[in-house]
Figure 1 (cartoon, one colour):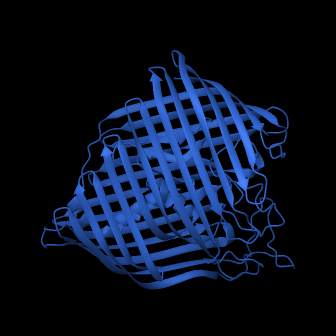
Figure 2: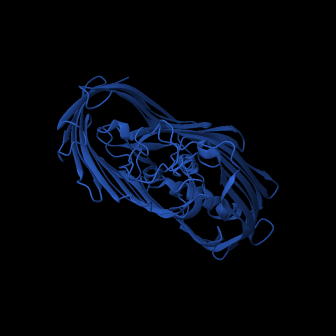
Figure 3: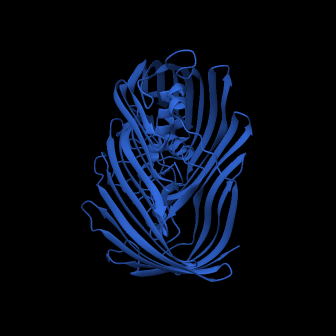
Length: 545
């Protein structure tokens, strides 16, 4: 969903320039606090197949869940950490649901090493369906062979310092993303086989020097440059990009500035050929992934080196509202980017973005993770599953992953879309909303296989909503809703619409012991097929230390 939204803001801020940010920026002092809440939990879950089409085996199946987790928030003068992690062991009754291990959660951390030097890191564990257009992070209690675990981790230093009036910045980030074996990948012989992500390693380095408006000149300026490289295990795929640019900020009023920049960029994406059989069909390994021909030359999927430029406005009429918008030339076409942030109150924030970039599953996941705040609340449905969103606090609304998780293709793609995150609360109420749209046009070379993803376009829309109310000092009621829509451009692939919702009642019993009851209804509707309807009930107890 918001997969590109938070990464878009990161890229947007780097493009706007130090001068504009310094002119309209705010400084927020965090209050020191440490909250660490580990727990153990036992649950009994019942699934009811309401569609009677044998998608889940018997009409009623059940499993027992034994889980351990921790929610933590640490904020001191030097360290900020937000964490929500849960490990769950699912023990099936009978043969309809196999025993399974599920890891889910987020960690974001920042450490101020010395004055101007900090180190940031983050980690993600989530679950998604393996097939294209699966219901993402909705209900994953039934068809275990069709789900997979996703892991991502990143870290790196950031430098922000001064040399007289000059403002100097630099940063480095390394990220690693892994998708576990997809047992259901490419298992349908009527559909064209598509390669799936295994693991990727991503490097990003940036540097800049500039000056704020009014320091020595009436306008601000910044010279910046960067290098990116991602290596993917599938087909020895490589993404490599260099850029350098100059940006200026011209204040028009105390709250409005004109911004613009020009530079040069070089992007190249390449891979090796795929092993095929005599009919030109890719030879798959035991996990449904393509196999690489190590003796083949590198094949070019995308290559552009050109002058890039853009211009726009930066408007901040008050400390709670910020709007930036630009139009320019990049990726050999006209691009539009924008970002809006509005803090309606101390507990309510809305953020929206329009983005346009070259991305991949690995880079997009890493950048979304890096764009999350260190203080957040992980959205979970009533069955303790991470629903794809992390809602922030104060001036940062957070972000979501689920639109990106609807397609685990290994190919790079041109990504265009928009996103919205709204989070907040008032009195006993708390809420979070995330929505996004993404259009992906894949970039792939001509290979020996009889089908290529090159120029294939898919579209994804997703919506997540959480609502909670504290009923009493020891009881609460929480609900969540989601809807996802996916249209694949691959011949033979059908549109998929998934939706669902759940409600959970929790009550404290005695000294850390609490009980909960949850009910949920989920649907997965594949075009041309009968919709799958699944109802789920849960009863559990938790002990918090």
